[in-house]
Image: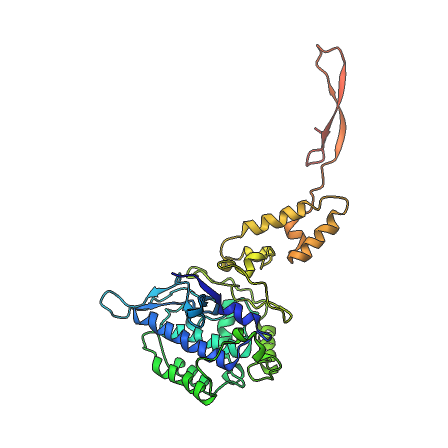
Length: 374
């Protein structure tokens, strides 16, 4: 595989309002739809469709070509006879919480339409700048929000063809063959109605100048979307259920988190080096590492934090440790256990052996737990 350029997640985050123009979003959607159709045609599902798994070409000749990446969660949905495999009763979650289809949240077997649901969420985010469940980490909570989402709110000020796109996907189940031509025609209708030139430069090629000063259309996040997100979080925040994790599968989390750039473009990383790899600050609190849904405990991060705390053992130790706590967003008492109070020391006269010159010698021994001297 040849070296590729920037991925779509980074390119979107660099935009002034973290969204693309209608021209860029729909033309990207057409290319991604074509790539999904291609992988389905050879009998595989991708199962992790998200912006960071699509990158632009690196060379001048390929700079406007979108490439699909990362097939680590791909699964063959056809058997050796070319027939659709029977769905498993409990398949486990696969994908990225923000973009996964509802089927994945329910631990159901994923079908071809589920890759297309992820594409739909990508296009909505490209146009609106965010999704209502953007800040929520609990996959079950996000799944409920996706089931209950109001498409009029999610697609506010977006072309009506995207409503038809979602309507077709809602009519499909695991074994059904999606109508790729219908979905492609809906996106082409948007291109034609908006008179979008297919060879027009993408937003990042123009330095995002075509987005500056733009109004609500595909720009500012609507108050309806913000209030919807807040209401759902308020209703279900901090639900802590001891759910069975026997069918839990690896969950890709945090790779497409939005970053606050204050209108400035993030530093460009070398190929294979992400912005999150440059940050030493851990993404989750230490006690959250211990939750099964986050996978194995990240001991490297914990050791790094403890090393910082150990360096604070001076006359201002506690104050400095509090600063570390603030920087890492970690509870002081979790990482830094309170010192155990030392046992009281007493003097006790112990008889010296008879063959010694001194009659006795005083030694210091601690009290026993029952309060009697030994």
